[in-house]
Length: 149
Image (cartoon, rainbow, N blue to C red; front, side):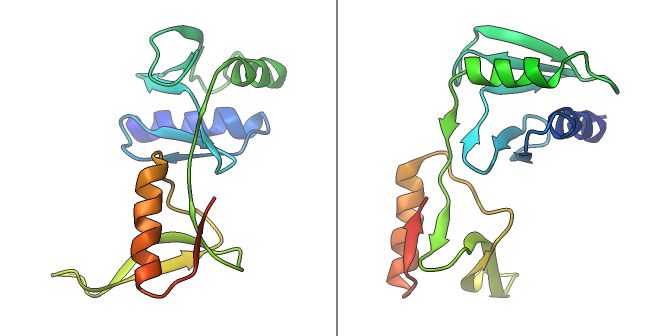
């Protein structure tokens, strides 16, 4: 049920030309737009609620996540513009187009030998700049040249 709802959620945006990715808990995914902001919205059952600002109870618009949602591209763009969204932060390998996407381990059973993995797609996103900076400091201590974007 949750997988079907999240598929419809992604489909709503992609059919209307909005590039999004769902991250976090499948029950309450965060909707990341263009890898730069987390939209001020949440899903409950098969309803997508857009809120005025992050963590607000002030709902601007609700869209039923049906097979063919009742919202036009223009209406979706308009509601996105009416809401205030939070930025997300990514850790980038300086001088490249590669982002931190995760970590690998020499021995996955006891987390020995952790090393970062960088790629162009699906970067790890951080909602808190201070935490992203902490991750960057740790990587810099390991000899990587890092930027926060």
